[in-house]
Image (cartoon, rainbow, N blue to C red; front, side):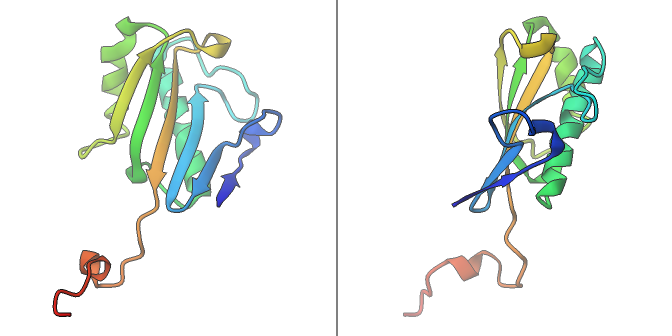
Length: 140
């Protein structure tokens, strides 16, 4: 079963902002667009990357999650020369253990410099039993 997680940013587009399937949340590609206006936040990589990650954070928040719940990102950069600068900005938001990540260089819509999609996992509620609750009883 899949459940859409909607924000106002995908209202007129043929996709959900994110979809929850089981414990996983799949966030659609986000760029440096301002939610209220749809305008690009600025021409530079830093402004666009910060806005992109803030957009992801907003969608995750709507699902009750944070950036700490992200396990995988796919990063699309318009130019491979942006890679090192992007990494410096990315590290401000994601910390060890980092999500796994793929980086691709390609032309992006609207003249964006960066787009990121993400997969997050909802953590199981803590019940005190830890992983042992998931393992078969070895005494039987």
